[in-house]
Amino acid sequence: MPFNLWLLYALMLKSRLFEEAIAKLWYDGLISGEMHLGTGEEAIIAGIVSQLREGDAMALDHRGTAALLMRGVDPVSILRELLGYPDGLCRGMGGHMHLFSKEHLAASSGIVGAEGPTATGFALSAQYAHPGTIAVAFFGEGAMNQGMMMESMNLAAAWNLPVLFVCKDDGWSITTQSESLTGGDLNERARGLGIPAVEVDGCDLSGIWEASQLAIERARSGQGPSFLHARCVHLEGHFLGFQLLRIARNPLREMPDIALPLTRSILRPRGGALRERAAGLKKVLSAVFSTLRDPRRDSANDPIQHARKTLLSYPVRLNDFEDQIKQEISDVFASALAEVPS
Image 1 (cartoon, rainbow, N blue to C red):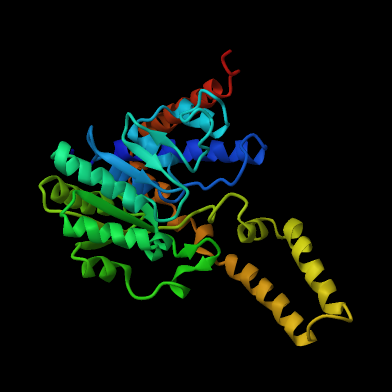
Image 2: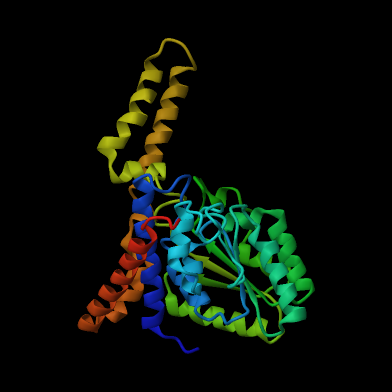
């Protein structure tokens, strides 16, 4: 399919509005457990999923909502699953980290790195039973340090399987900077296994689309796997309620709960040496202040805004277009929040 910015922007905006509405339900206490959103990944997901065909498969991580939505899974079914309703996508038993759609050959898992074996299995099936179809694995850079991911990439290369490995790299492994626990270069790791690797900007929609188009065509034609390394920013941190972002966004409300106990610990007569306790307080405050300069707070790292800039040349059409999408999402939530059928 040719590159169509309006179509891709629609997919991205639907995903963003859908997940923002999910966030509100989570903050209101209607969705239990952790919530990992894909806000900030939309260009990566849209640029790839929009090129998939019937019979192609997806292996997703714990941020699978956007990919499922863009693939055409019923949004009401997804939302009712997150709410724990028995008529949800997985009968209310999967939650947001374990979403499955047999019809769409899509499976997600909260286990870091599980996307590797899942996608490789899908690709092996495609190679033997459905030539011309492919599998895609979406995962974070932390998954590249999991043995099963590397084993899967090795097997995909050795057996020349039709799979695209997509690493969504935001530079953070939960609250730890990934560079502090990852050795070497991820692209070179893939190339060391004989897999072509391409580096892309996670905000550059056309760049992602073009790179993935080549990789997908390569897989379909029997030339084996590819590795796409996409840099991005998770706008909400690792999960909703991410501590450092809460502090940065509302320091007057959040800081007392952290600073006061640490200050009291310094003044206690017992415990570690004063300089050690002071160093602990300094470390916490340093992390907070660095968050104020965090790229997650910079609108320049928002793929939605990047895609929208070009469309601003058509203000009337864009306004009508966005209003229509907003109404669609509003209708989805109105339907999903209706009473559970008896």
